[in-house]
Image 1: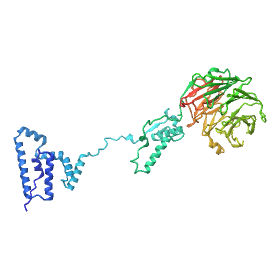
Image 2 (image 1 turned 90 degrees about the horizontal axis):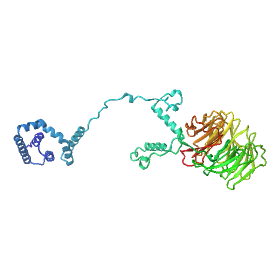
Image 3 (image 1 turned 120 degrees about the horizontal axis):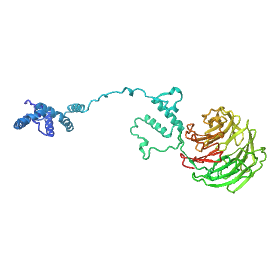
Image 4 (image 1 turned 60 degrees about the vertical axis):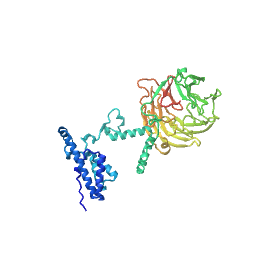
Length: 548
């Protein structure tokens, strides 16, 4: 058998320099297949060799016919024959090898090695960073004495804080202002925890937030701290201003109506619209300077007591009748001044002398029971459901009574209080606020008052310097209004979730409030009113709340 002669590949490429790339790959593939399998005869190899030699001669003849200047230019650009072969290899190597691999014309081992080499050539090596800033690794220190961050300092040792600690401090203040972690933040943590547990399925899961359309940013329903958005409105009693002190201001429990009463011996009703506040009705009580007036729970009656009189009146608004209550059997009191109407509409609590508390039915006006505390009862209030009575004594003690059994459930000393002056319970029964003669208002958790012997206040608010004579929670338990009638402008509004005072009320250096005698919020906290000693019922619109 004749020995096969294999033509070197580079000479073949040099001779076929002008052939089409696709045709060249097919011919090269056929030659490799012939060498691999050994099925072609020696005659076919010789014929192929002669054909290649003929084509090579033709190409050389074509080159010889070109002018010397053109050949020199081609050699300058493409190099000589060997350099041209290398150039063609680099330009056509990647596509030729990939096509040959698909067509199966290359050996498996050769194709793998050549493709790997080509891929390595195509990818650029990774570069090192041009430079590294050393300050990026150093911890950034924040100056906490700046006026925007000064209130975040817990002690003088925290004049400098790292960026991470400051971020943690801001997060703590946000949670304190919101009354805990918001639901959207808890949801994010739960989602992260679930993704950590199910790492295999995490790639398939998408964030719930991105699966929905709509606005991502919405207005928060909770009241923000710091600044209270409010507007001064026309006085609630502008159509009938009083020449003497107003002792009471109260919003109707269901209608858009406000009531004022005072030492001018009258009780007046006004419609609240914030613009004109028209008068509905005014009742004059002869020789009866009103000490306190209050709506009944259903809003159909008005109870009024006088300064020095055992008599008190009940005005039936539905029937238009004024009913005097001259005498109650078993009630041995010279004067009836302080009273509280129960939220369930069943009872009326009268504060007597020497620490006596008298419970009277609203329906029959009969005495059903009497309770006694140590010292003098200076302030009392019902729980929102009417099942308990809270009393603050002149000696600084707080008593909690059960209405049905009229037994004392709990008794504790108001921390730091020498003489009690006022008491209030939040509408959701979560907080109890106690005011004292020094102006300090202690805010307690209601559960602590019932459970602990000596409960500690959540916060002692010291923004008043004279006796805190009035306390009132708004219906949403987000604001506590506290006031003193000893000096002018002694009114403060407390943001309950953070237990901080709103900075913009009252307006500094403007004595518009004068001496506050009574305060109240509208049923949905849309309005706030203050009765002062100048005979005016100041009215404010709280913009955060949309309803009356």
